[in-house]
Image 1 (cartoon, rainbow, N blue to C red):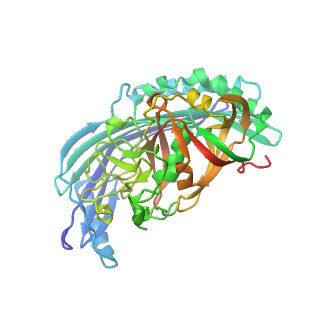
Image 2 (cartoon, rainbow, N blue to C red):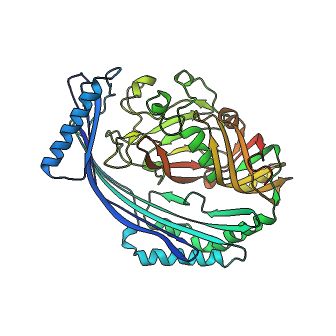
Image 3 (cartoon, rainbow, N blue to C red):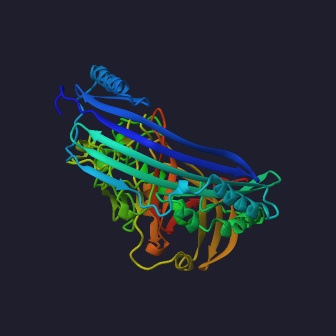
Length: 477
């Protein structure tokens, strides 16, 4: 790309509609239903980027927005360290839509609220539950991407999220149980059918009872133990200790505004032993990987969805890359991960579906526990902390179960574990098979400045880790 050339790329989110509903103790705590429409124009001029956006789609406003983007690029070029280099990409004309069985916005708000109130009522029917919270979210993003290279792509993406939590206050202690997991529950690129699949009302009483029972449970012991993590907790572990450090803009120091950089410096590629031989992780945006929040047809540079091997039999083999950063790792093509939160944000490298592949041998969670002599089974994240290079971490979970002689023998409260990323993944010695694998959605991944909040996906199956430090996070509780 010569220094006197510029490449305008614009992105329109048309009828970007969202609905967010929440209840707390039998009352509506939040309700919104909105639409957004606008255009973002990204320009490469004199070897530097410029970006401008507008919600005015008149011809004069769009031309003015393009002129601002060019002016910003030329101003940026005056302080550039080097010209932007873009990996080539063949432009395509394409249509892509999320498979959706039930269009979520055909279901009325009244019906949505009625379901949330039923869940709330079930949770609070359990004696000892002092607060019940529920939430339900839908989004339809429609995007047109057109570039001066010839790309002309129309994508429509649906997403649905739902979850709830029971809180039990007793004395000076708070215990909590969430369903299907914490941080808003399960989110996927699906329509309203996800709401039916999750059996929300059917599980509410059990969740309330577990929150109350945790007050009488024994404190999780402290020491070095074997631990078994459920698939949702392992998904968050992947997000923090694999997903973020493989973002190539973090590695190169181009993006350190939110949660720092990365320990995965370039010389580690294809040399670092990231995990045990059982650790196989991919970054996969393709539809065949599943309905993850990181699933799409094309990224914001018109690069088709791909599957990138990140960890292969324990060896670190790949980063999340863009057309601008591909050359830094000797790649001749982008990994297709450049995305923006909306039309008024500059696209940056974001996680797609960063997933650990299931084990090849048949293994259920109950078989895994039966094969564990002594340890702790932990479920559902409660808290997490990780350093700005994504190396030292500590996670707390909502509930634990002591494993003794291959059986769950007692409930444990305040379970937690900590470690160093590479040591932790190298301690994995068993992972369940495909039938136990779930593609979880993380809807609230923050990055950049101004901050962009986007969705990612993480597929995982329950797994076992040996010799892990357990119990220090809630010591004394």
